[in-house]
Amino acid sequence: MKSKKFITIAIIVFTLIVVMTACFSGVEDDKRPAYDVPSMDLFDAEVTAESITVIPNKYYEAHSDGEVLEYKISSGDWQDSPTFDNLLPNTDYTISIRVKEDKNHKASDSDYLYLTTSKKEPQVLPAKINYTQENRTITVEKNDAWEYCFWDDDNYRDANSYTFSEYDNGEKTVKVRIKATNEAKESDAYEFKVYISGYYSGSGTDQDPFLIYTKEHFNSRSTVSSNKKSYLKLMNDLDFANSSIGDCIRVGDNFDGNGHKIVNVKITQAKTGDYIVQNYAGIFTQVHTVKNLTVENVDIQLEAEEWEVNYLVGLIAGGAHIVENCHAQGSIVIDDGYNKRKVCGIGGLVGEMGTTNGDVVVKNSSSDVKITYNSTADTAVALRVGGLFGSSVDLYTQSLKVSESMANIDVDLKGFTSYNYDRYSGVGGLVGDTKEGSIENCYASGTIKASGVSGNLAVGGLTASIYASYESYRSVYPNIKYCYSTVDIDVDGTNQKVIVGGVNPMMHSKTGPKTVDSCLFAGSINITNLQSKSAAGSVYGKDLENVTINNCFHIDGLADYVDVSASTAVDETTIKSVIWQRNTLGLSEDYWKLVEGSYPVLK
Image: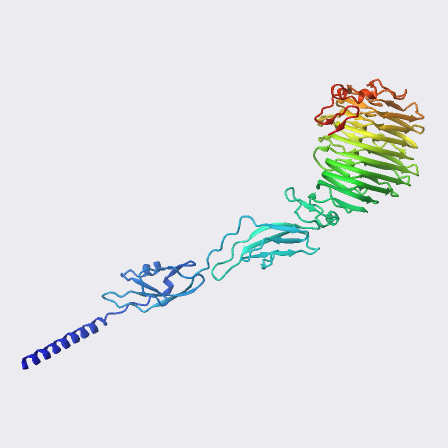
């Protein structure tokens, strides 16, 4: 019994000795020195939206005794890796850093880096953001994650639509971006330009023309910078209900009628152009290009002013450079009660062709026009009147081509003195005074009446005058081909020298070849009191130097004083024969519609 008790006591004593030995051994380890606290100035960090990486390079460069660092984020565990992943974006974190203990040193106390993860990169905006413009209102496609800026102040708003005031005209920059969130930053802005004006929409470029839906849009040209050469496009037919029209177009502008009509326009006042002595009147004053437009019932009534000022008047434009696929119907009346010298270019489509640089073109166009010039004061005037246009400017290195076009005219010129301002006054069924012109596949019909007081007057079934100058520059010389006229010409020759030609009264030039080929005059010529200096011919009247006439014809039965030596007489039945039109006159069915028993018409 005593033996068991002794064994138990021995075990207890042994256990106590072991425990106490262990305790005293631990006290000896605690005597190890602790590492110094690492300085946070020696640490950098790479921070993303979802990770933090501590960069201890500078610390290790300064401490080369084998220290090893360990790291802990917030209340996490210590780890050897300086990288912490799977963090939350835009969140504050505390990174603890200390030197790790080893057999000779205790771990240092910790110091801390206070870092915030970044926001996520935003989603990418679409490559194209759609928008609409209606008058002055810009509406961008809606997305609740986007914000919008319509001004240059970078003040973004949630509203995706904005209406500019009537004073906010010109080019504007619209910006769209993805909004910033707690987790993601805002995106870069998507930018696009809009042009604010009185038009429905558009910036006035070739690819983005100003769109015109209403009369108000049409009259809004004043809201666009005067030096901006614009493109405009008509989107609806416009009825002005016999009211006036605004100055929609400037020199250099390009207008596309888009197959629409402008009707019932009344114009009673001409507008001053680039030169103070030039007054323009028409749907447009001056324009570079007008195409695909029909104008009907245009009523232009002007009273001449009491000083020397020129008038350039046309149903479509006072001045233009290119006219394609345009058709005009209406009347032009100029009453002149002042004996002040002036020049007038009056045309069914355009007053004067040639406003800017480049070749001048009239193509696939027509007019049905009544033109009246009435002087009650023996006005000294150089008239240039034509069914399509009245005159053209000096073209130098440019050319003028009229093709696949026609005019039906009713011209009445009264009481004027035709003074020799550069050349004769002139009126032609198709065009008035042309320079360096080529006229092909065209025709004219209607009547011309003229009763001047004195001076010189040239009248032609197709043109009044066509001539070449500046020969060294020319690439296209004057010619008239595959054309005809059924215009009835009635001129009072009592007080005027009158030159009349069934095709063209005068083809005069300084140098260069001229050609009249495959043309027909099937109208009539009546000159009351023909004077000795006057002349009339079935093709030309005078000035035929260097002119070649080939395959030309006239209807039989012209007055005896009409010189028919340059053409061959044909009866009307033959003229209306498709075989004769095709095989003899040489008209191509690429351009002409030939119907048996009728005069040819253009397709």
